[in-house]
Image (cartoon, rainbow, N blue to C red; front, top):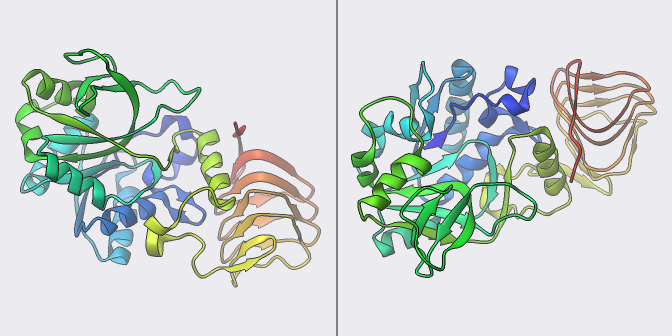
Length: 337
């Protein structure tokens, strides 16, 4: 399952057009990257929950699942049900065996097959994929004992001694036992409520510690940082397989340029990523970490550095953009760390 019902308030105005999992990243929906991880782990069908812009999210999921050769099961939430309620809404689809759940707004470059194998080998009721706590971030901690058992989540749970704080990636493996600890209806949180009930009842929720590239794309700055990391080769691409955003593009000294892009007469420092149908007018200058989407145009003499230009956007002649997201008439500041 990919959790896809969130409102995406921190990414407005982009989320006025796209639910977060459908937002394009280097020319393809973020959902495509996550489907590639699931497919690589042997998944054959994917469930989603929808709430915000449900028709857009469902259309994206249908197109991407067809592309990946995966079945799709979708459930709509007229009232948003939270992470636990969202999973509960797909009980009919998920409860036959262990299943994976991913947050729909993450970019995570790690094969998930070994995670599933470890979950099944240890016999846990659920497994949370964890990373070392990122420096300078205020994420709620998942506290794990020396044996790898989760004992407290965001301050909730039975606790214990010698606990170490870890960062939750938004990736879980669950057994159908989780459904026994969900309420009959209403919103609830899988981590802070359902898992805590399981811990208090003595069931095992394990932490699976990994190292690898992870980004939450929930803010403009994090979105732009993920784009930069992809363009500068900081994100391992092998786990994405055919969802590699550079596949089929011409590699030049300035970056990756689609054969259908028109950049004649523009100055490119790079690395840049130009989708098919992107147009750069003569005299436009692109610095580092710039993406120009299909259907977007950068006007004559415009200067861009560390910018994402979304579809249906016209960067005006002579306009200078630095560290921002450009969509239609919007210019969203996205200062990089």
